[in-house]
Image (cartoon, rainbow, N blue to C red; front, side, top):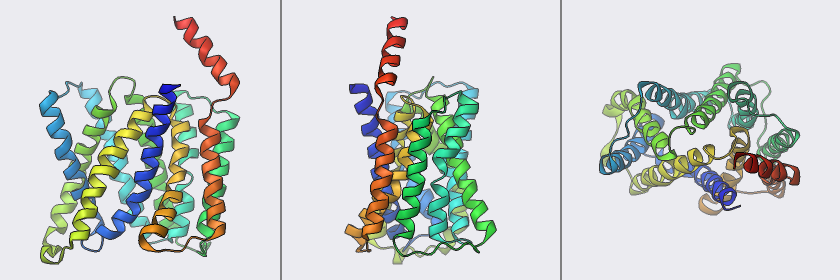
Length: 306
């Protein structure tokens, strides 16, 4: 029971900080471009992990493990942020939110074929409810879903969906041999290296004299909580439960963002949006709570191992 509580507490922490990351990013973007913001966020987090690794001893990993870690970082944060940022310039925010709600479905499929995870009715029900909840949450705010939007933008956001899905499956696989600290540390360090060329390219255009204290504080928040804490928590959870089950918590992120924007930025939150958010949270609950048969099966497996 303690193991399950710790795992789901980690997923809730991830959901909260990744949900608030959109608000932090919005504040940071008042002084920095998206790619510069990402580099500063991940480079500060890299500094933390480098200090941890040098104090505790640099992990001795095989070239195959480094290859998988680099591939993980390429998908998230690399390709995910690239697809999402560029895609948003061609399509609407409402379309983006709804397409990104497909991440758990992509994870369910990939985890089944790559990791051999079982596809059960509860996972399908939870994912379906969460997607419906996201649609209600987005459209309940008065946003119009443009069916005639840019196909290119929608395809780029779909690229972000599969990038996130591949990251979750790879991190789940790496969790069999590496700790969440090792996975997150190298993922962040490699991610910083990926963003470095874009930072150097945009460096001459940054007006450092006009950078606000709020933007700097937002970068620190994004680094400490949305990168170090959230990635550590999520990678930890992926070492404990199936990728398909953990991925449903991702659809809780827009709920946190909507509530956070209501409190912090003064944005409106309608009753319809609240209903959509409640549906998403119900889906997360359905997916996380084990049924009696699952508990009995787990007890049988444990007994057999002993």
